Length: 375
Image (cartoon, rainbow, N blue to C red; front, side, top):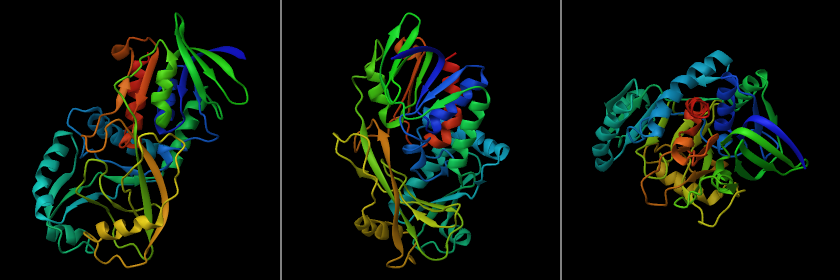
């Protein structure tokens, strides 16, 4: 087994890992990214809605709220600078019954407390003026003008190119097997075709689905005995026919997901989802990403609450993703876990665990936070 030294090692080449690598490289660090797959962003990062979230839903003062708003602002600017397609189409969060309508002022209040710009309450008539295909049952809606969609894959490639241009390196098919805290930093043992021992000054664990397991495999690092991973599979369907909406349409949300929302993706398709299918607690990655066509029954029922013209037979299975959670079913949503030396006492180690939505929107802000913690 070869042994060599590295300045900064990032485990995982998803959106957050690549953003961390970029931010570290911009600070002059020599960065090595280790990715267990044969391509970048193959898990959570590439299996989501490609939505740029405004920051409405997250508890005020939480990392999710702070980093989503900051990350969204940075993301639009980054896309414009690097030629990544981004569409600030806006979003309507619609309420179709009295209970949902009664909940909208509190959601708007939270959004404004989080610093979300250009966000207001509109009545049903105004919502239908903006989107005529909405149901006449829509009572009120929140209009978020800063929400949008973007080309996430072009974004990933831009991040990769930026940190590699500054001397960084990315190695595929290189899973991290274990590690150990040493007086000089952190030793990482990798598998794959060329097993190695890497002696690193800094290690950023941004391994997505595998992050908690990798954190626990580092001898002398934090154990996170109180954490347990839970997995929520979200499936997407596409609707045939001409697009009926211009904006994102979200129903009032629940604890697991922002509901079966509607988006006109950058290819012009009407995409619906994700739903929330809680997997068994003993499920482990890699997951089965096949979309069950029978789930369309639920999609028709829920989507027709705000889009009654959705025709029978219009839906086709598209793709799915799995959200990593540390909050069990029925529990309040948990915040991102971003743990550095201040939290766990191990110099040079940063663990990012349960980075689910809005992780993609927050990725640039997360990367800069991690780079500050790691220096």
